[in-house]
Amino acid sequence: MPTCQKVVRPLARCLQNTQASSHPARVIRAFTSSSQTNEEAVAETVPFKPMFDPATVTNPRHERKLMKGGIIPIGSRRRRAALKSSDNIPFEQLPYQCFQEARKVLAADREEKLKLIATERLRISNLVATDATNVRGGEATKQKRLESMRRHLEYLKIQADINDPMIKKRFEDGEGDMNKPIYRYLADKKWRQYQRLITVQRINQFGIVPDVLPFFEPTADVKMAFKKRNVQPGEFIDSRVSEVPARLNVQVFDKGERLVTIVVLDSDVPLVDKDSFMSRCHYLATNIPLSPADTSLPLSKATEAQLVLPWLPPFAQKGSPYHRYSVFVIQQEPGQTLDVAELMEKVKRDKFHLKSFVDKHQIKPIGMSIFRSLWDEGTAGVMSRAGIEGADIEFKRKKVIALKPKQKARGWEARHSGGKYLSLQR
Image 1 (cartoon, rainbow, N blue to C red):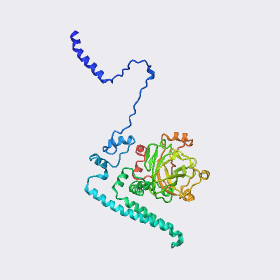
Image 2 (image 1 turned 90 degrees about the vertical axis):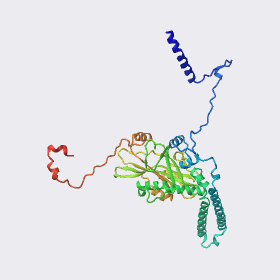
Image 3 (image 1 turned 135 degrees about the horizontal axis):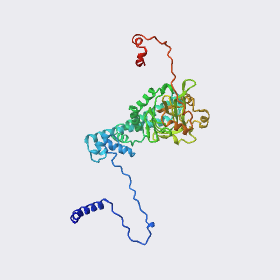
């Protein structure tokens, strides 16, 4: 036994030292006359620092980690890879002779455009100061000429900055000022290359035209989300997700602030008595301000002076086909304000016709988004919480009896119609 203890003792000491080093150092409180309750632990707040740089991250897995933390990688992956492998030099000071010479040419061209802009502004101011009686055609011709000259002025502003590499860099980084014509032009061009095509495809695919409107061409980009759930056009959304009001991001591409009306419409409400369908308005708010720089429109933030019909959770009863929920952004005329009290009296949810509403108030739809809904495991709970009846109703397709008379069996079917061939019959 003593020999065994001598052998085991060094090993035991080694294990004790390892365990002691693995535990954090203990804080020993010195002797003091003050009580322990008077001492408070001070926690140092360390500012959050992302693990990866959003300007130079190139790994897709790292990009997803950044996006989960609410940080969007800047620019394209190819651009980030180029910045990662190059020196930290400002973009406008890149030491490339061809690049710098090209910037000089673009700067000279911009100076010429600025002179044309100044000339056009002078012409506009002179025409504004001219009396309409001195203009051939009167006031109508004067206003028409002013409108044409202002459009040409906006065109010159875009042409002055269209070739500037710094403008394109800021736009790609998401730092563009949408109050400037050049950034609105670039955003409109990017939207029309992809996202608008998808929206138009969904409008035609789901029959929004002519079921809801006889004609519609979107001119504004409308993105929709329920809390953190982004909605793609035409996507199926769970009824528990759409129970809360949606949040819209509406990007317009023309200058100035305007008032818009938001309408959420269900086009596939079953009418059992007539064996048909009708429309139901799930949300209606009007006189909402919108501008190119202020694009966020949370439907839950509408005030009492704007809200006509509050949010009704989308639902589809069991057995009914999928319901199309269209979210329309309708622009009002300049200076036009709709009477909310009058709308609350006249507008009803059921049998709501968007075409009649638009024609009556002389307003114009500029953008839309769409999602679909079906009966799911949470629909009954959503309907009960919203006080909607009909969760226990199930729609079934009516069996259509063929008008063609039943034909007598022939050939193989006639020969195998006996009792011993019942297993072969359908």
